[in-house]
Image (tube, rainbow over all chains, first blue to last red):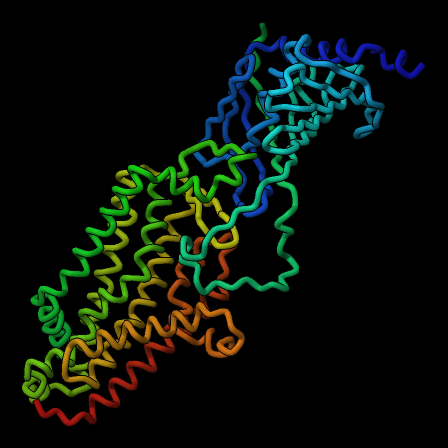
Length: 211
Length: 280
């Protein structure tokens, strides 16, 4: 009954519908603002321009040094572009921000690829990915939350929130010449160094070129 | 009269070949570092960022003039005291060794004016060293590598500072670094008042720096009481300008401690020099 209300019975068809929406755009540009909260890396807000061209060419134009997730941005669209290259199965429903989504687990046919599992929370009515959890062979899991606005009809988000684990760095004191600096171990404001990295990308002023 | 004394002392410094050793050493060292970084800098940087780059993508040039200047400063600021002490440690004892100190004090100027003249000339020489280091580190690096955001390497992580937010930090950092080097210069001038040969004050200054640095680095509770008051603990205070947010209280504390050391060293030097029995 519920699946009938949601309108999709076939998970692969649902993923294909999402991709068709994404594929309607040949390329786009948008102003971007990046806010990063990464353990062991403190940086200010960065502004720039994001340029994307199908299938997976992503370019960031910024005067500042920008940090983006290595995976989970452009590679995801490429991954779902070939429906014969993966198997999709429904794994339940979940409400995200008031939207009832269908959870789809996507397993790649090629077991030697970098992406080994994708879990998608899809709004079946609007055919939009609301959340994705992408598990990579070498770099762990990247969770992405999508917020849509002006470009919803093309499946282009206004905001992406990436959350992932990053490996801690060990920087020798000799390399930093920071020999006498001793941090207060009781500093209550200090953030947990093992927390996941969070990168928020806000996109606006889209310039979309359709196929 | 005082300005004349300063001018004379500065001319004396300029006339000594060893005064140019510091400038030459900085030029060669910066040249070597820039050459090595131009060839292999990305390997050096990836050693630090490799862990992050497994999950993150850095867009933009990390290896730029601002980062190079920072690397050069943190590498050289440890060695610059020797170059300063080499000249300032000789200011009084060198005259004593040459036999010209006795003649100097017969001039119609007070001993305080003589010592303050030498101190001011030494301070000017130290300033020249810092300015040259700044020009070589920042100017040459930016010319070779271009401008860009600065990724600062701290022992507890990385801080990325945007290009427009960097110059004032360098200028302030150079100011505090100058104060640290002036402390070394004052220490060596003070030791110079107690010696009749050039080598003694220079070696003693370096020995004091090494001793205090070891005490400061040894993470044992017995030194916790003295560590905050050692001038060597505050010699790296210039780096604090590259933290975000800038710990102004800690910097102010470092500045006060360095100024206090300069005051104490200078007072000891004046006290001793005014009562010194000059026999040669």
